[in-house]
Length: 416
Image 1: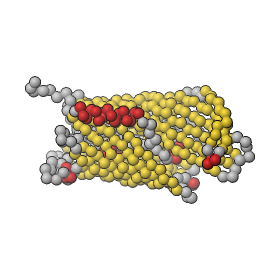
Image 2: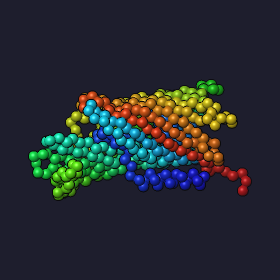
Image 3: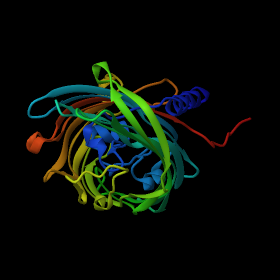
Image 4: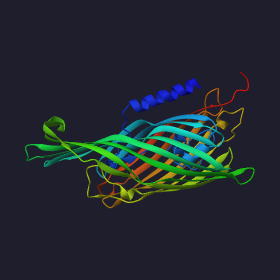
């Protein structure tokens, strides 16, 4: 148990002590950034579905799932993504490696459990610009919006759970805009820094029932109401000139007071239904509607960008050849797969920006003291955007690694 706790504490330290750029996508320029969190590695490997819940894994997308937890569970995940971006005339490659989440779930009875953790769920990381004989432009941004949360789930009747989660959202994002005209002595740079803070909520329902002695059905629903977060802003305006290699040199600068702003975190509702054979296989489908039409940009507001409500469709599941096999280690492994299609709600130059991904992965037992702890490896191939209307198409491949470690707390000893 002590070793497990140490692992989680080290992960917390790494997570909070290292500034992470979680995306390099030009689409993170818009709104509050690109929403990147897709659940635990187990969820991601099944297309991102949140319908499935069991007694030994954390489901960070539906707080009602805590009601099924029977062992104290520590989980941490990391993702590496390679992206190949292209326009009609150019190509570029970039990559990012980040810690995705650090979380703990603790059962307090056979019907209730709580959990807490830290998640970076929305990120900014872009560098855009043009250079010709008449004008130089450069737009850069980085940062992330993080989420510390506390959730609780309770089984109110056999197979039926309810849950809730309170989230404290915080983070910092910066963006810079530079323009230099060839026939003007000095150019200009505007640098904005925003510190975010605010509270949001997530509510969930989960049902798991037996169809007969062999098959089960699971259903879930989650709802996050629209909420406000506060942005404390600072702005610096500078006169600049270009040096060799188009490096920017500041001539002079002045800081300005910028009023505090309110930004919207959109509402979200997800419905899911799944069917399977216990400890053998499971498959589920989900639908999500997100109220992103209320999205506003941080500082720059391009005229070619509009926001509509976002929708997503997900399908995924798992297969276990023989969960109690003695002769074959790989027969006890969990094989996962899934796919997702998302309409992000962002429209650029009249084009809807969509995202598609196919995922697969494996969960393997680890450790000698617990038969339930496991390591999870996941892969995803996907595509975002389009080269039409002067936009960017991104093809990406990600590999993810997660640990789910189990222990038993609050167990009454029979002997002293």
